[in-house]
Length: 114
Length: 123
Image 1: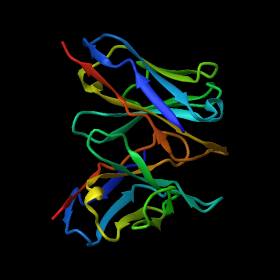
Image 2 (image 1 turned 90 degrees about the vertical axis):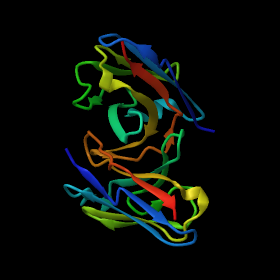
Image 3 (image 1 turned 30 degrees about the horizontal axis):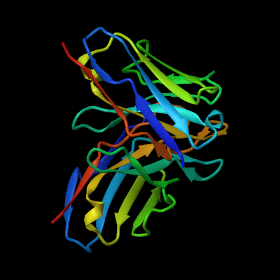
């Protein structure tokens, strides 16, 4: 199984500052035949289901503010919130959906306001 | 708009059974693969199972293999998860979600998720 490891487990960022979350997979999730990275980022607020933010590692879901950016390829990925807003307080998960299941999630990163 | 509504959760004793349902609307259900993902209280997300759009292909996490069965009824736009031999560690909120299959082992992400249904396994 592909193991997804996020860092840090939590971070506190001042309003308007940048937040950076890293995700590392134990094997590449890049499909060479189409050059897509099978990596998604989800945001989860308390009492709510996960919400898709980014897929194919860097494609923003419709309606997601452009302060959210996904980057990386192969085994190393990053979610950046360029200017943290109060409504961004949440837990963020990366997930690989590469080939056959199981499709594993990172352990989550809790983002708070400093 | 797309809606996924789970039901069937509740309190069950260890060793017991429960059947979860997920009612889909707002999209062509038979075109989409479906999955179940769960989240234990205060913990992270764990993918549980998926089923192809036809129902012919299924996958399970090792933690539930042999105990859980995923199925669907495309005529009723519904997804199910039959959970048998339940254990305390199965206590979680269970979410259904939809995704695309593009062929040749290429899947898409889950754009739509239900609100979840809580399963509690306790004596």
